[in-house]
Image (cartoon, rainbow, N blue to C red; front, side):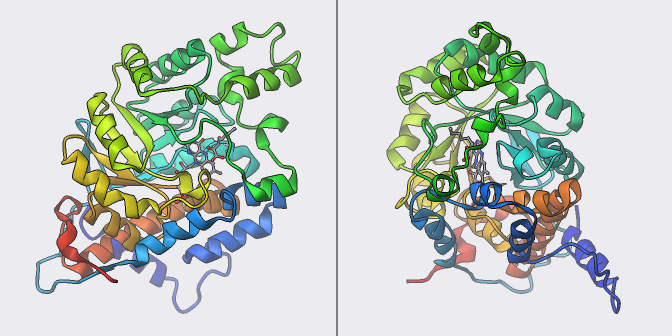
Length: 388
Ligand SMILES: Cc1cc2nc3c(=O)[nH]c(=O)nc-3n(C[C@H](O)[C@H](O)[C@H](O)COP(=O)(O)O)c2cc1C
Ligand SMILES: CCCCCCC(=O)C(=O)O
């Protein structure tokens, strides 16, 4: 994909001197502002808010400011390579669409719009267990485009096993197990707004179409949705899980397993000891533990422990191309993009998500070139300096 960034940049400049007044934002803060304009308080703050006083959300952004790029000159950066290899597959770029549930609260097309936009951009889409649309429908909307499945480990092991089986059957090529959400955090805005999407039936699409889940109900979700939601609420989270349970998952799938939510180096070591295939350094976008460290702060230590034996990915705070470059230079193989895509979805549906991903990819490509690097796989710490 040589000069991808410049092509996107020129197509934006081509509208000079009369830019289309309807054109979509380029600036991240303007996407967020657009989302604020179109969404009610409940959904907007569900997306934009974090746990407690949101100090972790702030830490995520501040962590990127602590690292500065030190550009190199005269390094023949005309042809660039954004591709990355993960689990034997080659992806067009190191960007992935983060698993995000309940997207119908943001746009009526919900996950279908995000998945299609990701497919168009060659960005792997990670379908959330808490999607409003069933995982099979999302997979179908994407055709052969790359897709992974994110698992919320249900208290009912039959449901967990069934989700993994359905994901395999519908063409997902990796399982991302999110470990940091055994229960909902203390989210002040949602409590203030008395807003929890699941209680109005959003985010249960995968459960209400699951044979194992439905077999435990006395009436089908269609006949008695309120009881089905109550059953969902009782079984959704699984705070009793331990590292020993990873063996159960390994027994139920041949797909690569990645653990999402790893921040502590000791947990990185345990992940290796338990034979998983990858880890994702993440604090869930500051939505779970208030007062936690920024995800980028945790990345170098996790990478030190992993020592390239399995891929390390990261998310939480990726907003612009430079953030991607910093995360890759500190050892991430790829990054997950979360809230920016959701603001794109709110503002302009599928087109909005595509625009956000395309611009981030272009920005990343140009920033990499200007920093003096030709390929994402060549990025390392030598391009960065830590500012005290
Ligand atoms: C509205 C919303 C819903 C989310 N739903 C899920 C989910 O279902 N599963 C999951 O693993 N992570 C979920 N996440 C966390 C994201 O995958 C990702 O870790 C986070 O958005 C990264 O932070 P950032 O968006 O601030 O960069 C959600 C995040 C948001 C904003
Ligand atoms: C009951 C907790 C559900 C959380 C699912 C969606 C999610 O991960 C989020 O951050 O919101």
